Length: 212
Image 1: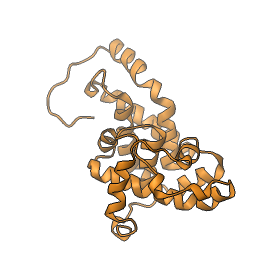
Image 2: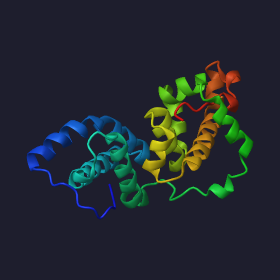
Image 3: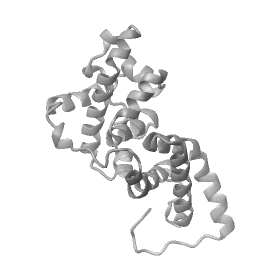
Image 4: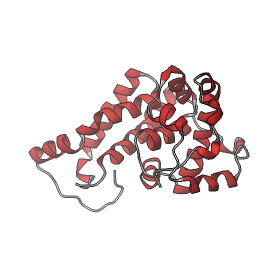
């Protein structure tokens, strides 16, 4: 949605309904998956998706035709979650990043950017495909701010720029948060990965960024 005071062209109801159906409804499944990963509750996810589409319809004139409808909807959903759903969910209200700032040093974050073409077996098998209940549980156990960047990047395929717009944070924060999120997820999955026979191949240097 836009905060611009500029007037936007008024659409007829027929044109608005036609464009809304064609451009926004195909995102429904991805939007629900995102909502469920945030709320960890089916009813809350359905309510959040419904609220997102109601807001999207109300402000549809502000959506620029031909732009990224998925990113626009995800941003509305994320804001609705923060404003309405997060406070009544069991998720932490916020992540205190100062407590974990020293957990991974700056050199690790910078080195990660040099691995853009690398995709580890852990990321492919355990994140993108969500193999097994252990993986889903590990992802769901992450603080919501870390879980969100994993979902947006590794599951939904958003670029850093798109993620920055969806989350209203600088790209540098996106990089840093994603790096930490992947390493936290790796740590949680290490024991499970070893039981599956590929734990020895896991290394934080193998985790690359493909969406730069």
